[in-house]
Image (cartoon, rainbow, N blue to C red; front, side):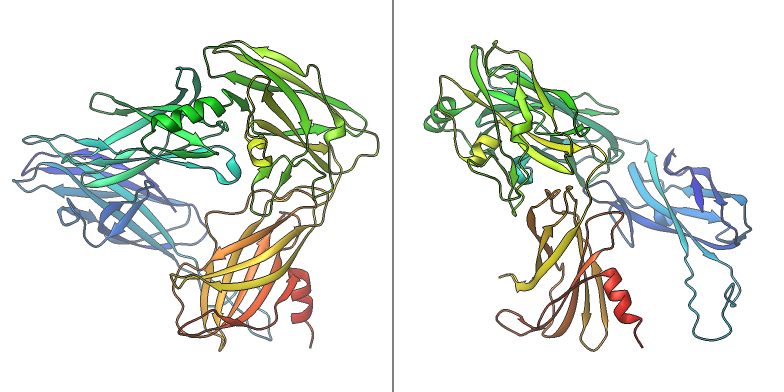
Length: 533
């Protein structure tokens, strides 16, 4: 089922009537019994319109639809007539959602139904939502936009920054907004420009939206400026500059003291390295050349030294450059060479540093290395994490070789101080290619009553070959005291079966859950066991 248009923007004067039409088409093979309804609308911070029973500035009671119920044959369409009757005292913007619910009309008999046994048929219904944005021009109609201070956080593993800008509309009409952010050094050097996104950009009266974006470049410790510009559809642009600093890889918008600023200026690298991570595909026995871009953030020349080291991603997802052999045992350091080890970076400039990767014949799977940069005149942070913040990580793949494999062990359940339950398990990459795990939990009462499943939006970063990580899923609701069974499922490849870890536990009024032995198995093993008589 499809609808057109997907958003209705219309205008009507106080006491007037406005007519608009909505087209609905049935692209399926079965007839649809359609029911139309109108509800109030609320827009979430991320931009998703949600139908609700009541909301500020709702026009749900002003809209009528004809017809409200009808049958839609397969491969057919219908135009619905909608009318808005505006009260005389209305002014500004008013909002609603038109909902179309389509129920397929099927016979009670299953196609190809077996003569014996139990048959199951699942009937899927369709639902389409059309937001209505009504403007009533009367009196003072305007959008009053207020932007709060941005929220800047570090990406997991120190691989960039996340920026979120809360924006609120205190006016009486909606507007459409877009935004850009420019990150500059304290000296004014442009580091990166990126767009702020929030769905289609609509912000309704008495609503708050979060405009988000990500900075893919890892910034060294130092002082920076976030230059934010917001553009409204019917108003002048807004511009503001927020200073922030990074200390030990963590961004902060707190007030910068003179003592801390002097410390940052003394210890700052003064340059950025891009990209933070690069996949290098090389045929076994072949070679490839890549380039790493350096940007001088200062007004003075910098003398730099480049070196090749190890790259290891810790179980916590943090990228480091260890001084010894990496635990994954797949070092690619010996396959990477640099054209020049020392060079000078001109003030406020960018320079590309060539890197050559050559693999021997018979190379299989992936290996890992890091190209790091240091100042010759300043002693920078030499810790494994500090060195990683001024490095490019190289994921080197012998083209067309390797296999994915993983193992799930040690499933645990823990209760947090706030009462929520967290499931954790160790995922070991036993193959010779990186994998990207996706975890979910299915929870049920021990007597068989299902509580559903949950897949968190935040998932672990890609896992190196030979590495391991701890997969964590937190159940979003509080659990009552009782006996439960949980199944932690991890998908690490599109071409491999999922891994399962089952655990039985008891929630008591106080204290940690008590558990029984954990079972870990793949989907194939589960299917084989269930098929036994």
